[in-house]
Length: 309
Image (cartoon, rainbow, N blue to C red):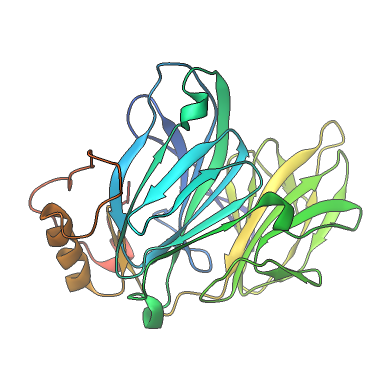
């Protein structure tokens, strides 16, 4: 962690191997910053070339108390879950899975691509559900790329993936104020990012970005001061793609252990027992699953919660 300006904090990525050589850069949760708006988890994977015979499939695993938010820049993956959803995830679409009281899902290479080489590149975020909605019925919502609002603002291309910005609103359903933007800065361009929410952060995907005159290197997360926007600039030599995330602060701390998020410690423990006993449902057509890690299944305090996987 370093300080970019007196009002902006830079979070450094931590490389995580999710198995089979599938590596991700994890920005949230961090020791110095647990969340930005409702987002408690931020993984950036790829660009990585998938070859025939490679298996980076994610076997069935459970979630509670959160929504997974999957967004691809390149590639494809097949989502299946325990409520019967089957959806090929493609670039530009938003896939929002609300786990609520509990859901099980898998993410695998689509059958049509088993014999192909292709590049996978994208982001997976988790949004913690407000306490009043932590135990809602699970659901899955796919919003195709052509349904995501896109506009030019200040001469810059902006896609409003989730939430509301610049007079347009994404159709993606949320449970609290949430902001998620995909911004393409042309080389040498400047962009005045307004204070769209009480908490905001900027993540450069493929190049360095100037934030109020100070460089935020590629693959770092610049967390802005509460209630503040920033002036974003691309280098004169190359365009930069970045995302902005944020929203209203969480309504209290969260326990985060493995794939579970909750405001209540005992709920995490119960979810662990339920998964160990295979009481959380099954994905139709799947016979594998990821077992509960470690014994005993412990839960740390919310401010120092264990890092999810």
